[in-house]
Every structure is written in structure tokens, then in C-alpha cells.
Amino acid sequence: MKKFFIIALLITAAIQFPAFAKTSQPVMANHIEYINLSWWEKYKDEYLTKNLLKLYENNYDLKNAALKVKENEQAVKIQFANELPQIGLSGQLYRDMRSSMQQFGSMQIPSYAQYNYYLPITASYEVDIWGTNRLRTKSMKQQLEIVKQAERATYIALASDFAADYFNLIRADEFLKIQNELIKTQEEIVSKVKDKYDIGLCTINDLLSEQRLLTTLKEERNRHLKTRDVLIDTMRVYLANSSENIERNSYNNVVLLTGIPPEFSTSVVENRPDFLQEEANIKRIGFDVKVARREFLPKFIIFGQIGLNAYHLDTLFNSASQMFSAGVLPSIDLFSGGRKIAMLKLKKFQYEEALNDYQKAILTGIKDINSGLVEYKEAQENYKESSDRLKMQNQTYSLARDKQEIGSASDLDLLYAKEAYLMVRKDEVSNKINSLISTIGLFKAAGGVDLYKINENI
Image (cartoon, rainbow, N blue to C red; front, side, top):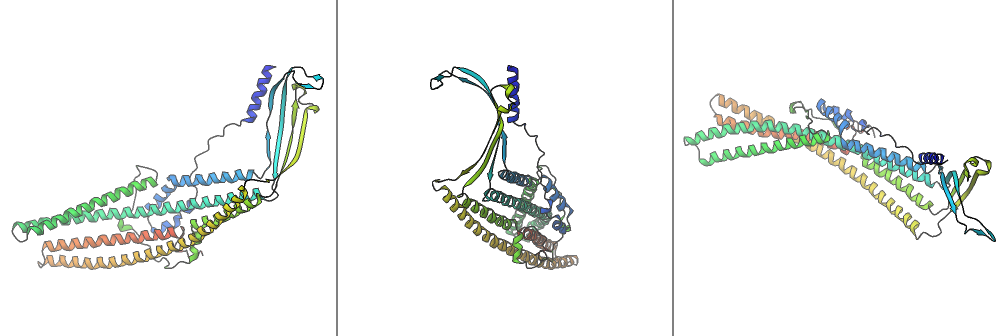
């Protein structure tokens, strides 16, 4: 008999404690459309596209953003479960031992001990007359929408920041090439000035001035080396690989984007993730306000219990051991210390705050887009001016070369002309990359959409 009781207890424990769930596969980023690869392909840079695909596959922030969405999807399911009936089995097996002190009038119950087998199935359901639980579920769905837009914002921000660092890295590479050529040219200048000083054709101050310039150029090269190395390390973090070789294009193959619309409609802000987040937040808090109002109304819970209750195992399944109860439990708080009133006021204040954040999101979006357009136009103009200046400086350099060939200019004059050309060349490189980065900033400000089609989608 004791073995049977032990087996019964183990079965009851198995019913009460579910098995551990199997470990699921790691959640990966799963919204590559948020990166908008078709836009990045317009830069005609296969290395950029390839790196963005690596970013999508490996970046930890994107994986965490996907996990946040999954977490909130489960939160919605948890809340939806509150709209459904709750059913549970809670079996008990215990030994009841009573003393002889129990007495009913002149009749005294002697001491006794007995087992009690209790197997009830309990069900309860809150009748959602006022739609309170449904409103809570709608609120959770809006919270899920907020998290989804946060995930999309993460994609846009990471892709944009990575692309900006990518082009900055190309600029750093080109700057190092130009800087090395500048240093080589300046070393030749120092050598020739020293020759002039040795024969008394210039002062020591002239020589020292050229030597100081050489050290300045070398210091600038060190800064470019630091910039390049920092950018590579930063991009490796994006790609989640500390030894990743950052493949990149050469500056000469970089394509400048032109023809982007000079003006955007203000309705473009409606595509930005922060705008959509604030819009969902207003809806979410609106549902919360309704829930807070309906908390003042009574609740109705239908409950019931059916099962078996016996003192002997052999009578457990007899009709006399069957039990059943059911009823409706209405409840209402008569006094809660002002908690419900405070909660309602709190939600109303939060709703007003959400409205203010919504209006601010519109203004911020318009500002960001207008600022992006201004930066893009300025960068385009600066690149055009620096290109014209480079052409003129190239002509000056060519004239100096021609004069040197016919003997009307010295080698030193040619070196000075070459150095001036290289200086202007750095400005041209910087302005071209700035122009590309300004298109990336505009893409980010517009909510990650194709800037060439942005006015068509409104």
C-alpha cells in the first residue's frame, strides 16, 4: 500500500511541475528590408554592399533588437491569456489525524487517522463585460509596435553609421597616400633649400621654416594613421569580428550621388521610426486611460470546480465521491485609498505628455530633414568649388613643369607647385566624401527610404 501511495505522489508531482522547455535556436536579425539594400546599391560599391550584409548577419545590436521584438510578442500572448478561461488541476493526498477532543453535544468523536484523496479541476473566467482585458491586450500590441519601430530605427542607424565610417575610411586611405606624397615632396624641398643654404643663397630661417613644415606634415600623417586604425576597429565592432579585414573600395572608384530632389514634402516625417513610435505610444496610453476608467466598474468572475474527493482509494471513482460547485463572484472596490483616481489622473498626464512628444517628433523630423538637405546642398557646392580650384591648381602645376623644362623655373619652384596641388587635392577628396556622407545623413533623417523616390511615395 505504501508503494502505491509513493507512486501516486510522484504522478501528482509530475502533473504539477511541467518538464523544462527545450532550448530554442538563437534569435537572429530577420528584417533585411529595413537596411534597404537597393538604396545602398546606388553607390555602386560592391564592398559596401558586402559589408552591410555582414553587418546584418553578425551585428549584436540587431540581434538584441530582434530579441526585444520576440520578448514583446510573448508579452502580448501573456496578456491575451488573461482574456481566456483559466483551468487547473491541483491534486492532494494527505493523512488527516484527529484527536478525541472533537465533540458534538454529548457525542464525542474518538481519535482517528485517515487518508484523503482530493482531485479537483478548477476553472475561472473573468467576464470581460466592459472590455477591460481586451483594452489591455490592445495596449500591449501598441507597445509591440513601438518595439518594432525601435528595431527598424536600429537597422537604419547602424547601416547609416557603418556606411559613413566606410567612406571616412576610404578618405583616410586617400589622405595617407596624398600625405606620403606631400612628405616626400617636402623632403626634396628641404634637401634643395639646405643646398642653397650651404652655398649662401638663403638664410637659416628659410631652412628651419621648411624643416618645421616637414615635421608638421609627418604629425598630420600620424593623425591620419590614427583615424584609419580607429575606424577599422569601430567597423570590426559593427561586424562583430575583432579580426575582420575591412574590404573597401579605392577613392578613385567612388561614385558621387547626384540628382537627389532638392526639396521634400513635410509628410516625409511620417515614415520616420520615431514618428511612428510616438503615434503608437499615443494609442497605447489612450487604451490605458480607458482601462483606468473601467477599473471603477464591478468585475464578474465565473468559477467552478469538478472532481473527486474520497477517504478510501477504492471509493475514489464512486458516484458518492464526485464533487461539483459553480457560481458567479461579483466584486467591486468600495474604498481603495484613492489609488484608482490617482491611476486615472496618472494615465491622463501620460497621455498629454505623449501628445507633446508626438508634436515634438514632427518638428524634430522636419528639422532633421531640412538640416540634411542644407548639408547635402552645401557639400555639393563645396565639392564643385574644390574641383574647380583643383583644375586651376593643376594648370598652375603644369605651367610650372613646362617652365622648368625650358629653364625659366627651378626644380624648387616645381616642387612648391606640386605641394600646392597636393594640398588642394586633399580639399577635393574631403569635399567629395563629405558629399557622400551628407546623402547618408539625409537617408537616415528621411527614415531609411530611397531619396530618389521619396516624393513619389508620399
